Image 1 (tube, one colour):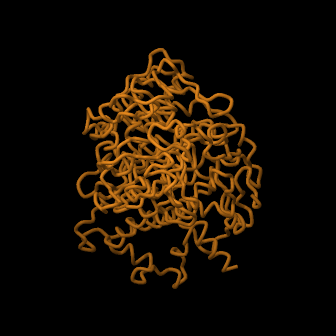
Image 2 (spheres, helix red, strand yellow):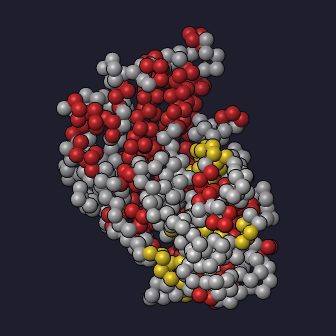
Image 3 (cartoon, rainbow, N blue to C red):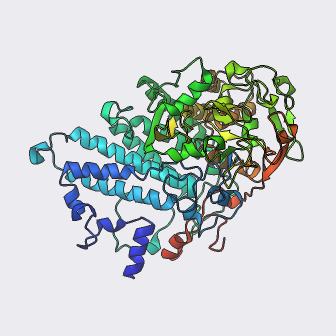
Amino acid sequence: MRAKILKYAGILFVAIWLSSCDDYLDKLPEGDMTVEEVFENYTTAKRWLANTYMHLPAELNYMCGLNDTWARNPFTAGCDEMEIAYGGAASHYLNNGSMNSSNSYSISPVWNECFMGVRKANIFLENIDNTPLPEESNAVEFTEAIRNQWKGEAYLLRAFAYYQLVRTYGPVPITDHVLPTSGDYTTVKRNTLEECIQFIVDDCDRAISLLPVRFTGENVGRASGGAARALKSRILLYAASPVYNGHAHFTDFVDNDGAHLFPTSYDATKWSKAAAASLECITALENAGHKLYNAKLPDYVNNYRGIHQELYNDEWIFWRNVEWYNHLDNCGTILSLKGFSILNPTQEMVDAYQMANGLVPITGYKNDGLTPVINTVSGYEEEGYTSAEGDNGWSPIGIRKMYANREPRFYASINFAGQRWLGTTCDFWYTGKDGRRGAGSDYCKTGYLIAKVINPDANPSTGAGYTRKAWLYMRLAEIYLNYAEAINEAEGPAKAYLYVNKVRSRAGIPDLATGLSKDQMREAIHRERRIELAFEGQRYWDVRRWGTAEDTENKPIHCMNIMAGTSLQDNAFYERVKCEDRVFETKHYWFPIPQSEIDITQRSLVQGPGWTEDE
């Protein structure tokens, strides 16, 4: 029995042994210290809090394989944004329907890492009041104000961990205290989805009450009150969204006692709550000096790239520093510069970008799912080649017209055949220097390569130009779009225009047409999120909360014909072809809980909706 308890403590609430009364289990690795000894001194208490930050995911690794580090991010390539040529990428398990309760942890270790973060935050919150103030310890840097600030950070870190758990698994067990190893884990159950969301909101409110909206100086990068407001904005938007708000797929999902774990009916007032939280967040952030990044305007392309390349700018709200992570830049660089060329946007993602005039170029696809339905009013042309340079130099002469006259975010985000990169061109056709013929296992699978978030100065062929990295969780443009989405659903489109148009204006495209209906505005906001937040880890979760993943994910993705073409203007390369089939079932809205966790609780913890231990 003791072995079972220790195994459960090490997996479900991960290393809860730190709180045990047992002399051996009560020791910490660093200096063989007990928990009590850690919190007798402000320096070691501070280190404990710093270590809690380590469980924030650094999701820079789009191309991760199974059992890679916590930097892994299978989600961007696990939806219709991207495909990865590397055969071992964990995203393939999401796309081909082979995820199950035995391998879900290997695809992304959300359960393990987040509960480790929760456990560390709980230990900190239960013990930091025992850390003596200066008159007792001579720790002159430690004050009551700092103690409260640290508590606020711990509350937000716990809230963020629970946000990740909820978006991944739906309802999960809530623990707001340190669990003893002697506990009866066969009674562990999921809380309801609404209880989980309220817990996150409550922790955000606690953090807001204790933290400044924005840190400056040496504290830049800490969990702030602005980050707490932004997380509250996001989780309440999720709570109002269809799959979280009485969706028919999940109203019958119950625990072993018959209690419904998802809302059983739709609550329209949740949109108003989400809108209010987002507007409060916007007001607080703007008052603290946050604003949309505009340092490189009127160069809209480099300005949009600069959002991610200029670290800690005024648009950033919450992020994790990763220091050096050259692998991302290598994977997003063309083969001829000794890059791996494997971060490949889909044709569907390319088609989503608007024209320079702000109009939608492609409104859908014909019955074959392949042939685009072209919005002729937009000016988009599928065929032919340009005879002059355009788009302020971002559209080179001779490229396919389908890439011409597109909005600046397209050129900032997508490298296509004929586009320039680091003094050369991207030659993705079959015989091109970056094409399939001369490539090995690493190659451009779709005819496109990601440019956004890739350092435009990093050169694998010379080893020069690499810089520090950070993974950005939340920025101001998202909060603008959160508010627009929520207020449109709550009241209609009138108040949504201002914030959607702020994002569009910064991107260098015209405002939305006036007179949109609620449905039209919803479609416009969904598209704006898809483009503005592309490759930032949002799309995967958006289509799931909207309940549209059955449409967007359960069909093939497409690409250029990388097995054809001998020159930039060879029509054979520009044939739209199927890249791969993709699978999505209703159960894929949520990850299954690792089956080992279900077994340890003797199934008091019910498996996710639609999943069994054999799936």
